[in-house]
Length: 581
Image (tube, rainbow, N blue to C red; front, top):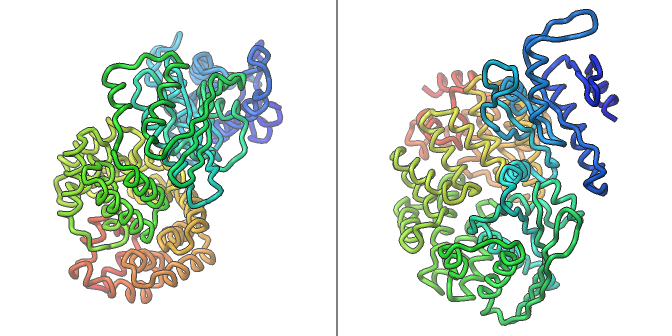
């Protein structure tokens, strides 16, 4: 198998070295693509093979100087590659810093930074990265979790797969998803466990999967799966804990309760898992798990429905989510997560859809959430956004750091933190956090779209193309889910133009204007699209409609918000600015 893959990627087997081989490639991209493909095929092959009979390779890749003599190669470049191979994980691909830098985003891979490594007989430390090998269909975020889980292998590692909705009503999906998310949240509060985040496991929702394969892809040992049936004021939850190595059942139970007992039920499941995995709960952790977010089950139900709407990510759904969160607060005025939910909805309505949401209201709701629960990451992220809008960047950065310290996998915290860096012109930092946001939420097309802007301004042309391609793929999936949302259509049209697919880009631009011709962001981004094509008249027509929103200063307005294409990134904008002046 390996020989065939090497040939496909234009590699040359220089020599065999006992149980290994030395291979030369014409480009570092070919080398990494080949190594990843080989290891992924081996991972699939080993799924049903007992652990003691599995064949596993280690692959090390370095970009450096070599000496060619006859058909052989040697030198420091070869020596470093060999030493990196020796510290690679079985079944893994390890690469040096120059390899990571040259590949960038061209292969859509995630690299787990292992830091500087002292390699045998190599004078200076070498920066080494592990390539995360999770299936792309599972998501980049899952891949990041894989590496993290393996690094923390001293802790029991667990993934909670989305509980199946057995109610016979698709409208109850939000409830089973909410139960799953809350169990993940409770388990994540336990320092003795490594828990895969929500966005990672939800990539498996609705799919028929082999649990042992899931465990291998996520790099974890245990899997919790189950089902939820809600009927009137009664709820039935089943759960089973599986050993990902052999598929054995460690624990299973079924609970039939009144709906009002739902929080106690979640607490019981969490404690059962902790008991089975022999993890010791600290006093604060025991208290945190037992603390219900609200005493009103109806408020909780509205909150779950709001959260389900919020995850869909379009203007109409943000409005619906806000309505659900507001109803939850009517029923329980002390529901911290609902206040943070409203602040998040208003933040995205303000940022993405030009809704005239009072900043004071967002500030008040995030402050209320913090007052009720100072450890709520969403509340710190909401406050960080308000501070960014007000230009208080230093305080905003502190709030985002707090949010990420509490919950590193919170999409909003990473995404909004990136925006804060962007408006300050700190493009390297902005790119880093946009990349992280894109990893956390594999269906988010917005983060990868903004990465195009960062990469373009940084002169990373190859990464611009890669992120444009990823933007189109993600935007296409979003349009399939929510065909009434113009945002993926207009961002996708610009990405398609960057890729040179003008016919399809025109179709998407027309679609965006047809969906919401009066939307400010739609008008601006389609003007950007026309500018890319050199159609300045149509670009001007749209921009002139925007001037009232921009206080007659389109240039500064566009630069102030990364939702609007940065003018300095497109030389053709200079023509438009000349015409407008």
